[in-house]
Image (cartoon, rainbow over all chains, first blue to last red; front, side, top):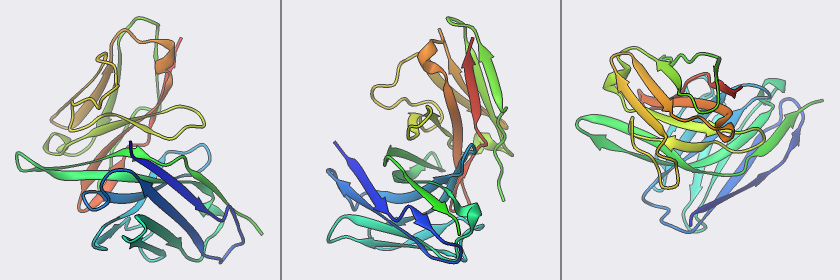
Length: 124
Length: 106
């Protein structure tokens, strides 16, 4: 059974860089996409971006200028860096496994395994 | 950018059928999935590719997608179904979430 274990600093000051890592245990690492999603207090889900085993990435347009997602295939891990954080970046951050493909000319994408989430607070 | 619109809240009586909609331009031309999230927990995938259920998801949860609207239907709603539900699609190489719907089982 696939499990995602995530960790990283939970308290940051404004202008610092958020860094989180997610380790994948069980299952294939190379057959999937690996995403980061966040949820601000009392709000909905916001997709941050994704990476595959070869390092190909897609990012949310609204965060693209501050986000870097990287992968370490030797450890089956992927990481999120978000620079110049502000209080608006306070959220629970989740890592997740994505599955994507094309069926009848349409592309599907869904995230079927999620980490437990890491609470990140940005405060001076 | 592409947008998905959900009603903020839906109420249903136990045993009745709940329908949660997700609207977007030509959404029927995309595949939609749905997540269930209970307080303090990570989201759980309940429907993918419009209408497929992952292993372990009850048959009373079903999905459809046509035109501009995708619908998550919960038949015989139980108290355990009370949760937030999010639709999600893929557009222009990005994941798009709906704003979420709080399902209350009265």
